[in-house]
Image (cartoon, rainbow over all chains, first blue to last red; front, top):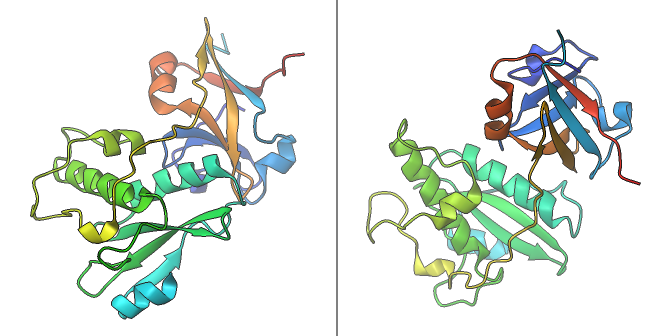
Length: 55
Length: 192
């Protein structure tokens, strides 16, 4: 995933997006569905944010 | 507790905000409470109640005057002092809102740690009705994101009721490393 949005509404329906929630923590969300189910992730799952991922 | 609250303040409206928190999910409750404290409109107050020893709930209360009385004077705290600490935190948020631009309270811990204003200040002097303050904090062990050369490694702290994955990567750490560069978020590998 490469898209960071400001709000859930900014993402296309059915797409995975990332945003900072009200607690100022990075959240991974699926608009119109469950990101946890789609990605098969649950609490404790490792997440990596890579910078300069693209040349 | 609802009956007691309404008995004292019949005009109060009580709204449960953590009914989706699973029993014994202390971290989930703490994150939700922290979140609500920041977005709760001024002149509202959070109170906490314990249900069947295992479930901790936060309740938003509001009276006609904007003040909610949640417990009788002199009554022993039913939540071990959390309620008073919420009032302290709420007051910290209110103060931060008044001094917008200078400082914004981002975390519950910061808010609680801030110095209380003088008694009788315009907003939110802590009422003795809220009981004794919590003497001993049990801080939750929330792991910090790990910074490496070109990446931040974190974990999913919580899955909310919509299936959103809330990680421990905070905005400050993120912006410190991102600096406007393109990013890619991937699923990490679990250590063997």
